[in-house]
Amino acid sequence: MKISGRVRIINYPGDYARIQDQEIIIVRNTNPDIVLYVNKISAIVAEVGSPLAHAAIIAREYRKPLILGAAGARRKFKNGQIITIDTARKTICSA
Figure 1 (cartoon, rainbow, N blue to C red):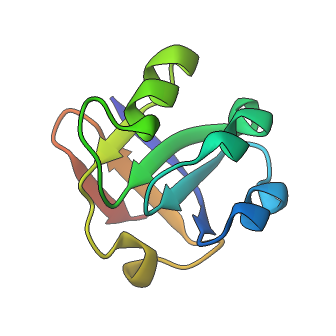
Figure 2: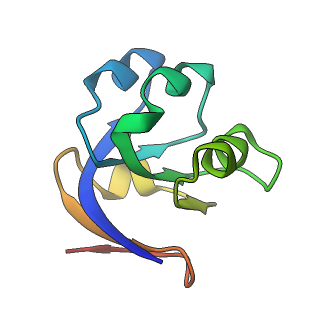
Figure 3: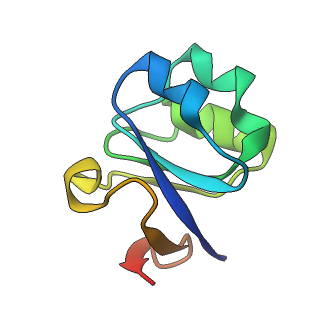
């Protein structure tokens, strides 16, 4: 599955409140605050995690595309940048 959208970098729990509709969030790992905003996002990119990580559970429960293990993604991409994620190939590209 390929998804394109604007990036929202989440460094702190307060950053969740800045999420705009259909953004792709990039996080180290999610925390429970995401539940308030998960319906606004189009996908999740997490720098760390496993199939049992919070990000993976949220993605499954809310049917959101997810890429786990994207080390350094918060440094590589910027807020507002357009990216495309491919969950089948586990890739992230600038659009």
